[in-house]
Length: 127
Image 1 (tube, rainbow, N blue to C red):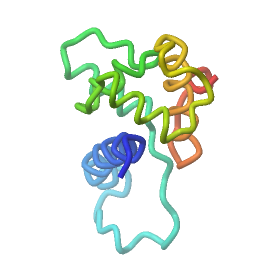
Image 2 (image 1 turned 180 degrees about the horizontal axis):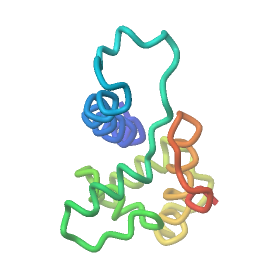
Image 3 (image 1 turned 135 degrees about the vertical axis):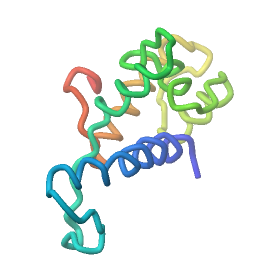
């Protein structure tokens, strides 16, 4: 499993951990996932999940524009080696020695991939 999968898994895990409480409030009752029609899954509100994590972290993390801060917020490895592996996984076309350019590309690409996979993110995060 690659780092992108780890990012998505962390976000989805948090979304599902919060979902039973939210679903019970919304429906006034059962939160049994088997009662939901197959294939009907609500989009994961990535921005809300990350904002909630940031509020709990007590750190000033610029996760909207920094891949390092996003990885730190999710408790994932943010080392240069890990980011280079992520760049390889996402087929980064540039020079991996130009870490500033790579990091800028990575944060946009990660948010674009999250959006493709059912994540709700603000439009400006993936551009």
